[in-house]
Image (tube, rainbow, N blue to C red; front, side, top):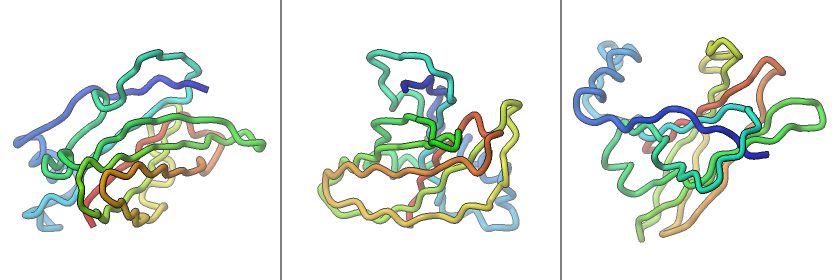
Length: 152
Protein backbone atom coordinates (compact mmCIF):
# COMPACT_ATOMS: atom_id res chain seq x y z
CA UNK A 1 0.00 0.00 0.00
CA UNK A 2 1.44 3.40 -0.95
CA UNK A 3 1.25 6.18 1.59
CA UNK A 4 1.26 9.93 1.78
CA UNK A 5 4.47 11.21 3.30
CA UNK A 6 4.14 14.29 5.50
CA UNK A 7 6.40 17.07 6.73
CA UNK A 8 8.19 19.30 4.28
CA UNK A 9 11.30 21.03 5.55
CA UNK A 10 14.94 20.63 6.29
CA UNK A 11 16.13 22.81 9.11
CA UNK A 12 19.49 24.41 9.65
CA UNK A 13 21.21 26.54 12.26
CA UNK A 14 18.43 28.22 14.25
CA UNK A 15 16.08 25.26 13.97
CA UNK A 16 18.71 23.02 15.56
CA UNK A 17 18.66 25.34 18.56
CA UNK A 18 14.86 25.31 18.59
CA UNK A 19 14.89 21.51 18.54
CA UNK A 20 17.20 21.52 21.56
CA UNK A 21 14.92 23.89 23.47
CA UNK A 22 11.79 21.96 22.48
CA UNK A 23 13.35 18.75 23.73
CA UNK A 24 14.47 20.29 27.00
CA UNK A 25 18.03 20.67 25.77
CA UNK A 26 18.92 23.15 28.50
CA UNK A 27 19.07 20.38 31.09
CA UNK A 28 20.47 17.82 28.68
CA UNK A 29 23.43 19.86 27.48
CA UNK A 30 22.77 20.48 23.82
CA UNK A 31 26.34 21.24 22.78
CA UNK A 32 26.64 18.33 20.36
CA UNK A 33 23.68 17.76 18.09
CA UNK A 34 22.88 14.05 18.29
CA UNK A 35 19.47 14.13 16.68
CA UNK A 36 19.75 13.62 12.99
CA UNK A 37 17.06 12.82 10.47
CA UNK A 38 13.31 12.32 10.83
CA UNK A 39 10.81 11.03 8.32
CA UNK A 40 7.18 10.11 8.68
CA UNK A 41 4.14 8.82 6.89
CA UNK A 42 0.43 8.55 7.38
CA UNK A 43 -1.50 5.36 6.86
CA UNK A 44 -3.60 7.04 4.18
CA UNK A 45 -3.79 4.77 1.11
CA UNK A 46 -2.92 7.42 -1.47
CA UNK A 47 -0.66 6.56 -4.38
CA UNK A 48 2.18 8.99 -4.84
CA UNK A 49 3.93 8.02 -8.08
CA UNK A 50 7.37 9.51 -8.47
CA UNK A 51 7.43 10.72 -4.87
CA UNK A 52 10.97 11.55 -3.81
CA UNK A 53 11.04 10.87 -0.07
CA UNK A 54 14.14 12.94 0.74
CA UNK A 55 12.26 16.21 0.18
CA UNK A 56 9.88 15.25 3.02
CA UNK A 57 12.62 14.61 5.56
CA UNK A 58 13.33 16.78 8.60
CA UNK A 59 17.06 17.30 9.20
CA UNK A 60 18.50 18.30 12.58
CA UNK A 61 22.11 17.37 11.87
CA UNK A 62 23.59 18.60 8.60
CA UNK A 63 26.65 16.37 8.92
CA UNK A 64 24.55 13.23 9.25
CA UNK A 65 22.22 14.39 6.48
CA UNK A 66 25.20 14.43 4.11
CA UNK A 67 25.86 10.71 4.64
CA UNK A 68 22.41 9.22 5.38
CA UNK A 69 19.27 9.43 3.22
CA UNK A 70 15.79 8.01 3.76
CA UNK A 71 14.96 6.58 0.36
CA UNK A 72 11.64 4.86 1.07
CA UNK A 73 8.90 5.12 3.70
CA UNK A 74 5.85 2.89 3.53
CA UNK A 75 3.25 1.11 5.62
CA UNK A 76 1.13 -1.99 5.44
CA UNK A 77 -1.40 -3.58 7.78
CA UNK A 78 -0.72 -6.72 9.80
CA UNK A 79 -3.18 -9.60 10.22
CA UNK A 80 -4.14 -8.08 13.59
CA UNK A 81 -4.99 -4.73 11.89
CA UNK A 82 -1.93 -2.88 13.24
CA UNK A 83 0.20 -0.67 11.01
CA UNK A 84 3.65 -1.95 10.09
CA UNK A 85 6.07 0.80 9.06
CA UNK A 86 9.14 0.32 6.93
CA UNK A 87 11.95 2.79 6.22
CA UNK A 88 14.92 2.24 3.93
CA UNK A 89 18.07 4.05 5.01
CA UNK A 90 20.83 4.66 2.46
CA UNK A 91 24.42 5.37 3.46
CA UNK A 92 25.91 7.70 0.88
CA UNK A 93 29.33 7.39 2.51
CA UNK A 94 31.98 4.85 1.55
CA UNK A 95 32.71 4.36 5.26
CA UNK A 96 30.88 2.15 7.76
CA UNK A 97 28.49 4.16 9.95
CA UNK A 98 26.75 3.36 13.21
CA UNK A 99 23.46 5.15 13.77
CA UNK A 100 20.51 4.78 16.12
CA UNK A 101 16.89 4.78 15.00
CA UNK A 102 13.55 4.84 16.75
CA UNK A 103 9.94 4.90 15.57
CA UNK A 104 7.30 7.15 17.16
CA UNK A 105 3.60 6.52 16.63
CA UNK A 106 0.78 9.08 16.56
CA UNK A 107 -3.02 8.86 16.79
CA UNK A 108 -5.53 10.51 14.44
CA UNK A 109 -5.32 13.78 16.41
CA UNK A 110 -1.53 13.92 16.17
CA UNK A 111 -0.77 12.90 19.76
CA UNK A 112 2.15 10.57 20.31
CA UNK A 113 1.23 7.13 21.62
CA UNK A 114 3.45 6.00 24.53
CA UNK A 115 6.14 8.67 24.08
CA UNK A 116 9.64 7.37 24.70
CA UNK A 117 8.44 3.80 25.26
CA UNK A 118 10.45 2.40 22.36
CA UNK A 119 14.24 2.29 22.77
CA UNK A 120 16.77 3.51 20.23
CA UNK A 121 17.89 0.60 18.02
CA UNK A 122 21.44 0.41 16.66
CA UNK A 123 21.83 0.16 12.89
CA UNK A 124 25.15 -0.67 11.25
CA UNK A 125 25.47 0.64 7.70
CA UNK A 126 28.40 -0.43 5.57
CA UNK A 127 29.62 1.90 2.83
CA UNK A 128 26.92 2.74 0.28
CA UNK A 129 24.55 0.17 1.80
CA UNK A 130 20.77 0.44 2.02
CA UNK A 131 19.20 -1.12 5.08
CA UNK A 132 15.47 -1.40 5.85
CA UNK A 133 14.18 -1.01 9.40
CA UNK A 134 10.64 -1.86 10.47
CA UNK A 135 8.32 -1.42 13.42
CA UNK A 136 4.72 -2.31 14.27
CA UNK A 137 2.32 0.20 15.84
CA UNK A 138 1.74 -0.31 19.57
CA UNK A 139 -2.05 -0.08 19.16
CA UNK A 140 -4.81 0.23 16.59
CA UNK A 141 -5.10 3.94 17.47
CA UNK A 142 -1.85 4.63 15.58
CA UNK A 143 -2.40 6.43 12.28
CA UNK A 144 1.02 7.95 11.56
CA UNK A 145 4.63 7.24 12.34
CA UNK A 146 7.93 9.05 12.41
CA UNK A 147 11.36 7.51 12.27
CA UNK A 148 14.17 9.33 14.05
CA UNK A 149 17.79 8.68 13.11
CA UNK A 150 20.78 10.01 15.04
CA UNK A 151 24.49 9.39 15.38
CA UNK A 152 25.55 6.72 17.80
